[in-house]
Length: 197
Image (cartoon, rainbow, N blue to C red; front, side):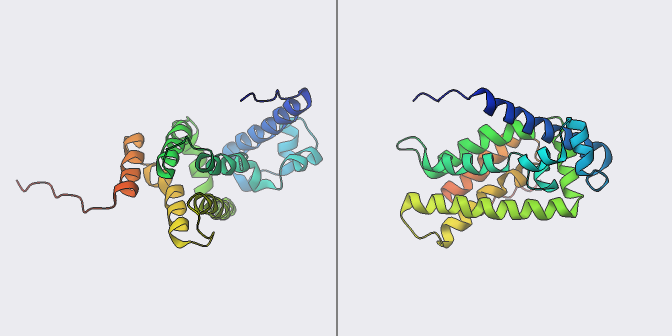
Protein backbone atom coordinates (compact mmCIF):
# COMPACT_ATOMS: atom_id res chain seq x y z
CA UNK A 1 0.00 0.00 0.00
CA UNK A 2 1.41 3.37 -0.99
CA UNK A 3 1.39 6.14 1.57
CA UNK A 4 0.53 9.48 -0.03
CA UNK A 5 3.41 11.97 0.17
CA UNK A 6 3.18 14.56 2.90
CA UNK A 7 2.84 18.03 1.41
CA UNK A 8 5.14 20.94 2.15
CA UNK A 9 2.51 22.70 4.25
CA UNK A 10 1.94 19.62 6.43
CA UNK A 11 5.70 19.16 6.87
CA UNK A 12 6.05 22.79 7.92
CA UNK A 13 3.18 22.47 10.43
CA UNK A 14 4.70 19.29 11.85
CA UNK A 15 8.13 20.94 12.12
CA UNK A 16 6.64 23.96 13.91
CA UNK A 17 4.71 21.72 16.29
CA UNK A 18 7.85 19.70 17.06
CA UNK A 19 9.92 22.86 17.60
CA UNK A 20 7.36 24.15 20.09
CA UNK A 21 7.22 20.83 21.96
CA UNK A 22 11.03 20.56 22.05
CA UNK A 23 11.40 24.13 23.32
CA UNK A 24 8.76 23.56 25.99
CA UNK A 25 10.32 20.34 27.26
CA UNK A 26 13.78 21.91 27.39
CA UNK A 27 12.47 24.86 29.41
CA UNK A 28 10.44 22.61 31.73
CA UNK A 29 13.49 20.45 32.42
CA UNK A 30 15.74 23.47 33.00
CA UNK A 31 13.43 25.65 35.10
CA UNK A 32 10.60 23.42 36.30
CA UNK A 33 7.10 23.19 34.89
CA UNK A 34 5.51 25.86 37.10
CA UNK A 35 8.25 28.41 36.36
CA UNK A 36 7.66 28.41 32.59
CA UNK A 37 4.87 30.30 30.87
CA UNK A 38 3.42 30.02 27.37
CA UNK A 39 5.16 33.30 26.41
CA UNK A 40 8.53 31.77 27.42
CA UNK A 41 7.84 28.76 25.23
CA UNK A 42 6.70 30.87 22.28
CA UNK A 43 9.83 33.01 22.52
CA UNK A 44 12.11 29.97 22.73
CA UNK A 45 10.43 28.40 19.68
CA UNK A 46 10.36 31.76 17.85
CA UNK A 47 6.59 31.71 17.34
CA UNK A 48 3.63 33.67 18.67
CA UNK A 49 1.57 32.51 21.65
CA UNK A 50 -1.34 32.14 19.20
CA UNK A 51 0.75 29.64 17.24
CA UNK A 52 1.45 27.67 20.41
CA UNK A 53 -2.29 27.42 21.12
CA UNK A 54 -2.98 26.57 17.47
CA UNK A 55 -0.92 23.40 17.94
CA UNK A 56 -1.56 22.57 21.61
CA UNK A 57 -4.65 22.75 23.80
CA UNK A 58 -2.73 23.88 26.88
CA UNK A 59 0.51 23.78 28.81
CA UNK A 60 0.16 20.14 29.91
CA UNK A 61 -0.36 19.02 26.30
CA UNK A 62 3.09 20.41 25.49
CA UNK A 63 4.66 17.77 27.72
CA UNK A 64 2.64 14.94 26.18
CA UNK A 65 2.92 16.18 22.60
CA UNK A 66 2.65 12.70 21.05
CA UNK A 67 -0.45 11.73 23.04
CA UNK A 68 -2.90 11.55 20.11
CA UNK A 69 -0.44 9.67 17.89
CA UNK A 70 0.24 7.15 20.64
CA UNK A 71 -3.46 6.46 21.14
CA UNK A 72 -4.01 5.99 17.40
CA UNK A 73 -0.99 3.69 17.11
CA UNK A 74 -2.11 1.66 20.12
CA UNK A 75 -5.57 0.96 18.73
CA UNK A 76 -4.10 0.37 15.25
CA UNK A 77 -1.84 -2.31 16.75
CA UNK A 78 -5.02 -4.23 17.61
CA UNK A 79 -7.21 -3.36 14.63
CA UNK A 80 -4.54 -3.71 11.94
CA UNK A 81 -2.60 -6.67 13.29
CA UNK A 82 -1.38 -9.36 10.91
CA UNK A 83 -3.75 -12.12 9.94
CA UNK A 84 -3.57 -14.87 12.54
CA UNK A 85 -1.73 -12.71 15.07
CA UNK A 86 -3.38 -12.64 18.49
CA UNK A 87 -4.35 -9.38 20.15
CA UNK A 88 -1.84 -9.99 22.95
CA UNK A 89 0.98 -10.75 20.51
CA UNK A 90 0.19 -7.56 18.57
CA UNK A 91 0.22 -5.51 21.78
CA UNK A 92 3.44 -7.19 22.93
CA UNK A 93 5.13 -6.23 19.66
CA UNK A 94 3.78 -2.69 19.89
CA UNK A 95 5.13 -2.20 23.42
CA UNK A 96 8.52 -3.68 22.51
CA UNK A 97 8.80 -1.61 19.31
CA UNK A 98 7.64 1.72 20.74
CA UNK A 99 8.24 1.83 24.47
CA UNK A 100 11.71 0.28 24.68
CA UNK A 101 13.31 3.00 22.49
CA UNK A 102 11.49 5.70 24.48
CA UNK A 103 12.64 4.15 27.78
CA UNK A 104 16.25 4.15 26.52
CA UNK A 105 16.19 7.87 25.64
CA UNK A 106 18.84 9.80 27.61
CA UNK A 107 16.25 12.30 28.92
CA UNK A 108 13.72 9.68 30.02
CA UNK A 109 14.67 9.82 33.71
CA UNK A 110 14.43 13.63 33.72
CA UNK A 111 11.09 13.49 31.91
CA UNK A 112 9.70 10.93 34.35
CA UNK A 113 10.88 13.01 37.30
CA UNK A 114 9.27 16.12 35.79
CA UNK A 115 5.91 14.37 35.47
CA UNK A 116 6.10 12.62 38.85
CA UNK A 117 7.03 15.84 40.67
CA UNK A 118 4.37 18.06 39.08
CA UNK A 119 0.77 17.53 40.30
CA UNK A 120 -0.77 19.09 37.17
CA UNK A 121 1.21 16.74 34.93
CA UNK A 122 0.42 13.68 37.05
CA UNK A 123 -3.30 14.49 36.80
CA UNK A 124 -3.08 15.11 33.06
CA UNK A 125 -1.20 11.82 32.58
CA UNK A 126 -3.85 9.94 34.54
CA UNK A 127 -6.64 11.44 32.41
CA UNK A 128 -4.65 10.61 29.29
CA UNK A 129 -4.12 6.98 30.36
CA UNK A 130 -7.81 6.65 31.25
CA UNK A 131 -8.70 7.83 27.76
CA UNK A 132 -6.14 5.46 26.22
CA UNK A 133 -7.60 2.63 28.31
CA UNK A 134 -11.08 3.38 26.96
CA UNK A 135 -9.83 3.52 23.36
CA UNK A 136 -7.79 0.33 23.63
CA UNK A 137 -10.58 -1.47 25.47
CA UNK A 138 -13.06 -0.52 22.71
CA UNK A 139 -10.65 -1.73 20.02
CA UNK A 140 -10.21 -5.08 21.80
CA UNK A 141 -13.97 -5.41 22.34
CA UNK A 142 -14.65 -4.70 18.65
CA UNK A 143 -12.11 -7.31 17.58
CA UNK A 144 -13.67 -10.05 19.69
CA UNK A 145 -17.27 -8.95 19.15
CA UNK A 146 -18.35 -7.92 22.64
CA UNK A 147 -19.79 -4.71 24.12
CA UNK A 148 -17.46 -1.81 24.81
CA UNK A 149 -18.22 -1.98 28.55
CA UNK A 150 -16.83 -5.52 28.78
CA UNK A 151 -14.85 -5.73 32.02
CA UNK A 152 -12.29 -8.25 30.72
CA UNK A 153 -11.41 -5.95 27.80
CA UNK A 154 -11.11 -2.93 30.09
CA UNK A 155 -8.93 -4.85 32.55
CA UNK A 156 -6.65 -6.12 29.78
CA UNK A 157 -6.32 -2.63 28.28
CA UNK A 158 -5.49 -1.08 31.64
CA UNK A 159 -2.95 -3.74 32.47
CA UNK A 160 -1.22 -3.45 29.08
CA UNK A 161 -0.96 0.32 29.56
CA UNK A 162 0.68 -0.24 32.97
CA UNK A 163 3.40 -2.51 31.56
CA UNK A 164 5.84 0.36 30.88
CA UNK A 165 5.42 1.57 34.46
CA UNK A 166 6.00 -1.92 35.86
CA UNK A 167 9.04 -2.54 33.63
CA UNK A 168 10.55 0.95 33.93
CA UNK A 169 12.87 0.32 36.89
CA UNK A 170 14.01 -3.14 35.84
CA UNK A 171 17.59 -3.90 34.81
CA UNK A 172 16.43 -5.71 31.65
CA UNK A 173 13.32 -3.88 30.49
CA UNK A 174 12.80 -6.12 27.46
CA UNK A 175 12.82 -9.24 29.63
CA UNK A 176 10.37 -7.57 32.03
CA UNK A 177 7.96 -6.69 29.20
CA UNK A 178 8.19 -10.24 27.85
CA UNK A 179 7.59 -11.73 31.30
CA UNK A 180 4.51 -9.60 31.90
CA UNK A 181 3.04 -10.48 28.52
CA UNK A 182 3.78 -14.16 29.23
CA UNK A 183 1.71 -13.81 32.41
CA UNK A 184 -1.13 -12.24 30.43
CA UNK A 185 -0.93 -14.97 27.79
CA UNK A 186 -0.46 -18.04 29.98
CA UNK A 187 -1.96 -16.94 33.28
CA UNK A 188 -0.34 -16.15 36.59
CA UNK A 189 1.37 -18.80 38.68
CA UNK A 190 3.11 -18.23 42.00
CA UNK A 191 6.85 -17.78 41.48
CA UNK A 192 8.92 -20.66 42.77
CA UNK A 193 10.88 -20.03 45.96
CA UNK A 194 14.65 -20.28 45.74
CA UNK A 195 15.95 -23.46 47.33
CA UNK A 196 16.92 -23.14 50.99
CA UNK A 197 20.69 -23.06 51.63
